[in-house]
Image (cartoon, rainbow, N blue to C red; front, side):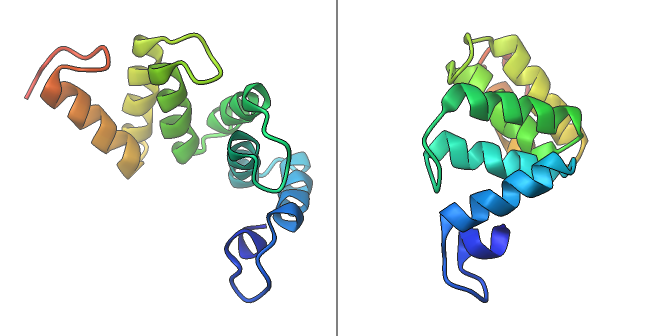
Length: 123
């Protein structure tokens, strides 16, 4: 799916990418589950469906997909497809950072540096 999503070595086509992501998701692939969620979130190659995207982000988090931890944390921080919950957002960023996700680490550090997003300023 990623090759079609980026056009790497083939013609770029999100709709074909989505079909590959769906197959891999059904086989339990965490990165495909996350990628399918991103497509649903943005409406790339498939009708936009934020609640379904969030459900796939949750599934990917449960499979250990670290980028999904960052993205689901962002959803909780800003109330995208879920009820806003700063604590859940921070906890997901913390877990993502612990697992090596640079984006989660950056957002967590920024929250602590600025005392924002539910974090007490702590630098």
